Image (tube, rainbow, N blue to C red; front, side, top):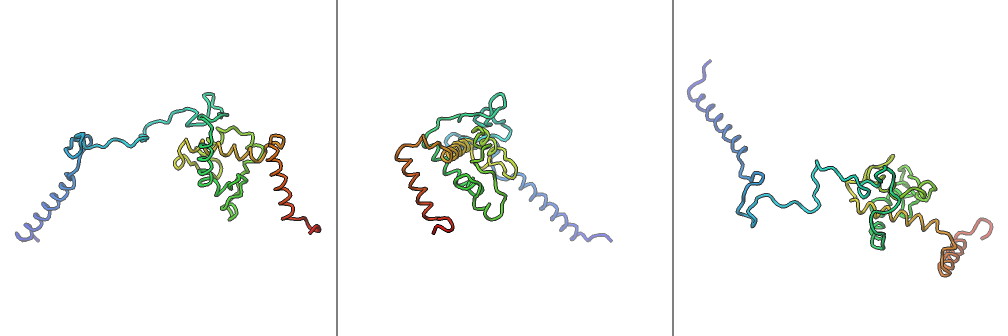
Length: 206
């Protein structure tokens, strides 16, 4: 059955309008890459890149700061930056935000989600981890280990080093020899031990 002239004209009009719509979508009012613009003072439509922008194709430098390893592929034993109070304070805040939910605020591995059923990580005060170089902790944070995923996309390298430094401080605070304490610090330690014994007496001694 042949279509009537009116129907044919309507079909043609619809086809032409659809094609025009598609072409309009191709030719939207937009700036092409590097196109000139009178809107901005420098005459360019493209805006300067944000400071610190890294292209997806750009390889990360294979230096100790970004890998935690030496040229011989061994973990670095020293921070690749000055160690000061500001760095430790930054490490503490970042550790409490990103690490303490699993590792606990003292690094004992008894964080809040562990108490609710998540697998307990090894305590930072374990002998093996106490003897691990600082680059090892940076490497684990960057690449993940076991059930721990990588935090490279969430924590920048500077903060990962700050956290690694704070972990070392936590380990030192739990294992410092008594003879390295001042007289005042020893007295505070003795008082805390006595206070703990009085608060938690052993059975039969109440």
